[in-house]
Amino acid sequence: MKITVVGAGAVGATCADNIARKELADELVLLDIKEGIAEGKTLDMFQTASLLGFDTKLVGSTNDYSKTANSDVVVITSGLPRKPGMTREELIGVNAGIVKSVVENILKFSKNPIIVIISNPMDTMTYLAKSVAELDKHRIIGMGGTLDSARFKCYLAKAMDVSINDIHGTVIGGHGDTTMIPLKRLATYNGVPVSQFLSTETLDKVAADTMVGGATLTGLLGTSAWYAPGAAGAALVEAIVRDEKKIMSCCVSLDGEYGQSDICLGVPVVLGKNGWEKIVDYQLTEDEQAAFNKSADAVRNMNSVLSTLSL
Image (cartoon, rainbow, N blue to C red; front, top):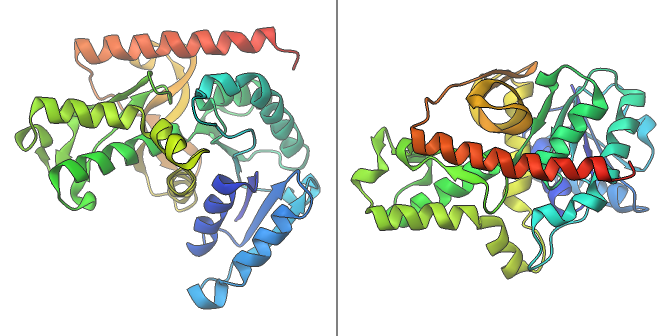
């Protein structure tokens, strides 16, 4: 198993660190465009190996895609991070060119990888990657819903003052401050609906906090978050390489599912060794479906910007 992470910034390095610690790959390549960054971070990681008890081969590369040859899974985190006050959507002009170039370079050396997109705006970058890669659609996956669902569970656990590991919750729709949809109706505490423990007002606040979870951290940190996004990327990769058949919310290509087509959007999918294997129908209520359709309209509008760019 060979895994490549493109982009050695905070998110990419954190994702790579989690992958290495879990020994998900025999060889892990970290690549960045900035001289020495990937080499330095992989060396730093390797110096933790004897302390943490992992034995993954780590390779750092400055823009040498030949070192990524024959990768089974590629995680793309490249692009500018958000700054305070900046929406994910505002990144599209710059990051679209970066992601397109990365996908093209990866495919020069790896013929049939599974590609995981973390770069923002994630839904549009996943749609772009699918268009550029011309791989089977099941091998192109956006990470956003996995992260958003983790944030939803975080806020639920804090509101209820219980173990986060007993909380189950899913966020679908676009990976944006106004487009994600925390499914409050389906959130549970060890199988019991959380609505039995939280008031409607509190549950609504949890959902609202989830939707601006990324912006909240950007405001506090002065840049995008990295621990949770990196861990979410690694968790998604783990489900794939270990063929876990886990249901996770991911951005995937829809062809009529949930009433949408020609779009990549967050829905619950089963993950395994071939990428996302099937979409799970959560049988949305009328209100949930209306919110999903509205989210799709917003993402589709953002995708239309791609046709105006010189890519």
